[in-house]
Amino acid sequence: MPPMLDGNLEPLRTPTARQEDGTAADRVRIGLWGAPRSGKTTYLAALPIAAMQFQRHGEGNWLIGGMTAEANAFLNDSVTKMAIEKSFPINTSALEGMSWSFQGQEPTTGMMRKRLRDASFVLEIQDAPGESFKPNNPLHAKVLDQLAGAQGLLYLFDPLGDASEASQSLTFFFATLNELNNRIRNAGGHYRGRLPHHVSVCIAKFDHPDIFRPAVEAGWVTQDTVGSQLPRVPEHLAEGYFQWLCNDFRGSTARLVRDGLAAYFHPERVRYYATSAIGFRLNPQHVFDYRNYANVDIVDGVPRIGTSPEPINVLEPLTELERRIRTSPDARKRWRR
Image (cartoon, rainbow, N blue to C red; front, side, top):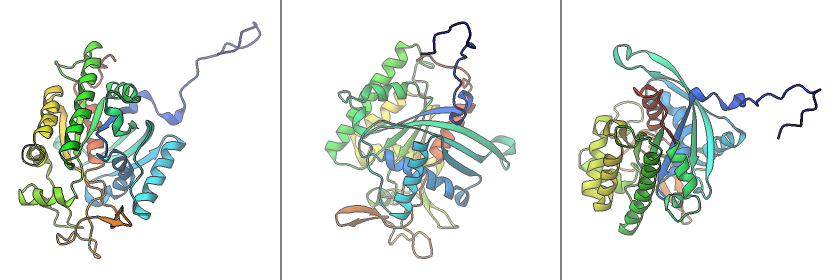
């Protein structure tokens, strides 16, 4: 509480926000969403590596910095753990909020497509344990608060898992989707009858042989002809790749996840990405070799990263999500929470 005034003290002004936190205009709130073991923490840990490698794989450049000491520590620890120690980050056990600054140059759209434009934003994101997306979890209400207040959502879809885990993933998915819809509806925040969020669906673990090999055989994968010659699912095929996984690979529960996304969000606000946080194993010449591409080794019963991570479609779902939010026709409008 401010001190009692005795007539001799200068009036106390309202405290101003710390400059390190950025301004409200450049802040973007993104919700991270996914079932247990879908790879949310590993995805976040791969972001600084993907940013450093971005200029090798495309036009533009990105720099990521923490807005707080805790956020910087996460970035530093992530690079050390994944790139040097070749180990995976520990799964999140508590709700952790972080603010990161993104500064870069990105290709423009339209007539000036060959030119780069400066881009800058502050990302607010929370890494929540997957169990918190279940209704009876103590953190569930806080997670819903964060998702309801977000402008965009990153949803990590895990194509792996047995039937039991797949059913449980649907439970985590629908419980969160249903309650999120109730909150937005009760606050009068629906946009044209659906949830207002822009969504990036990250189809995780693209590098895993149980995912990658069937995708190659089904014709969804192309391969770069330069550099490390990395395989990818082209942007224009990504939604079809997701549909194929749901229809032919995972079964009925995955189809319900697909149908839930289509029913609750506007299709033009949803994009799909085949994502890998660690990428593929590369040969000594740093080139992809289909004879030996799995990038996870089991050492003393513990999974380890085989060669230096080469994240695929980790940064793009986030930066393109921010761009869609910023350029949306209703970008200046705020829905009530």
